[in-house]
Length: 358
View 1 (cartoon, rainbow, N blue to C red):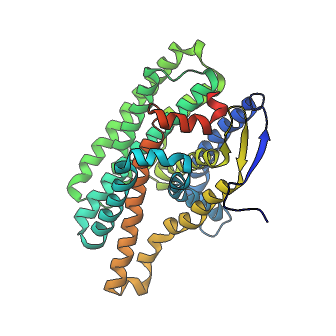
View 2 (tube, helix red, strand yellow):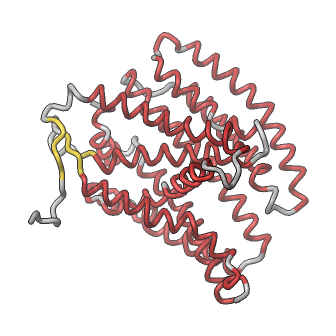
View 3 (tube, rainbow, N blue to C red):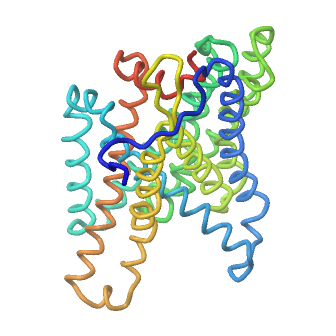
């Protein structure tokens, strides 16, 4: 019987240089499908889909994957090649996640409605910012893959501007239900400002694209406008399917694509790639087991036996808050793990995404 204490890997190709363009193309297409499929579903289909229809099952799958992507971050902690990065930055990868998880759990369990409302507003704005940073990272990968060059400053400015306006719109879409009434008018003004200014961002994006038109490709073009338009659903409707779930689920599927590549690829030799089934199984366990717990933890608070018992209700609130804190920890961890200007992170990601950086 094979020794399971050693990594299980299956060689893909001795010389990966010939295969890299094909892997690269499938990677980029997978990211686009992961982005546009949930956006199309939640804008065009989900608002009119009944709870008893077959489409409800499709929606549940999207919602599960959109939530389960967060525990995929735990894979970094099981990867021996990532351990030096964690040891170099224990504050970011150990202390801050523990702090956020515990503090948020205690706040949800024992603080009042006002405190939890402002905690949620902070979380939702940070979440939108996190989505925007991933969009920028996705476009940077596409730019390097297609042209071997990083994106221009003007392109980043267009994408970041859209993210900031999305934060302004998020307060109305998600925050109105929990925020104190005196904030509602402010949220309305921010939403209108975001809507009007987003039109200017779109015009600016077209100008930027035209300026660098000769240095782009079809796929890079699609990725650029995908990143720029990512948050447009916020300003199309106040229906939660359209104005939030559409791009939130797209973000989750994007991340699963990225983490699937990280867990699947190794390159012990410069010109050799291998597929690690053991790593894929670890990622799958995080997605399915821990992801399911993250997805359904809120249901505990709705159970009659929990709502009628002080102890049980506080435990359920504590667990819900802990998941929220763990999600914010995911924001912190990713902000460091994907920081390619850091030498060790750049070496780690270049190795895993060899088909992009070769």
